[in-house]
Length: 395
Image (cartoon, rainbow, N blue to C red; front, top):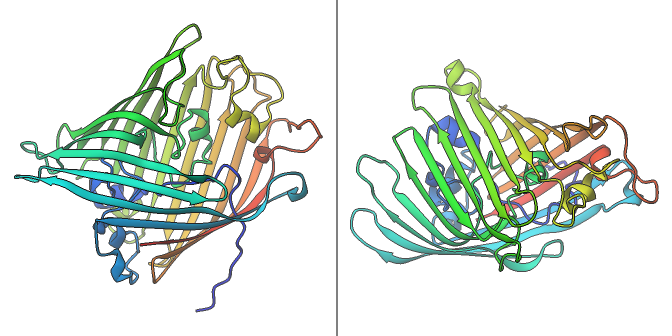
């Protein structure tokens, strides 16, 4: 088959991403740990996750092991005004993962060491996940309770497959935001899962905290009833900061399975999320937080009290190889400043090919209340239409 390659993708914000597919857990009514090494999903996959993620296409024999995982992504991106911002074709991710058993005991209890090294021109060379994971089977639970200790990303909201989602930037919870701490994950019942993470703070990246940030935490609940065609979730984050307003955020999210509603006559899913964040858009000096200012270049400085963001994603499985995708992002950085409102519509395809190869193609339309401009009069990335794509190969 001849591949039509429109390799135009992502931005400098796409230095690296962890693929998470909450629609898979929705369709199969499985815990995220069935497909992913982490208890809350995203990141390196287990053998089952590798097979399921192939969409019934043939995978490499190298993928038939839990001991390692590899992720290679090439990206390109072309906005409306490519001469005035970053664009082109680049290597986003080249990340091998080791998932090694350190101790194995009775009744599924074990300790594993997980380490991922990412090397790419966009993100540099550095450790991503680096943690010990201990699990023990609990009575009446189909998934063991798990304690994670080390450097990991936080279990907040819908873990989408890219951190360009406005809700991720809004809450400072992109999937490349790895923090140092401990997390406890378990099932309260067969349908209700929770994660509790305590870390240095919410933005140190795994190093020592700043002197005015003492600790941060995330609490995440997800109900995925086995007899109903949906899941619902609620997440909260909090940073304990001295001498400045303390940042916190709440994510309310849900997913609906088209397969289960229609009795598998149609195949697809719908994801919905609302994020409310307080004291988030400003950094410690009172300026607009860099991740927001770089992408949006806001017309006026937010008061920093309350921001509102929405994320939705609809997928229709046309076949085991072709998936039609629509994605919507919305962000109001300050609920009291309607002139700073951004929306983005994206439509495209995911193409699953044999040999662990996935191609994402998408066109995006930006809608803003009033177009902001940078110091040279250029439109920021958040106000520009774009074409984007990604080629991904994994083992």
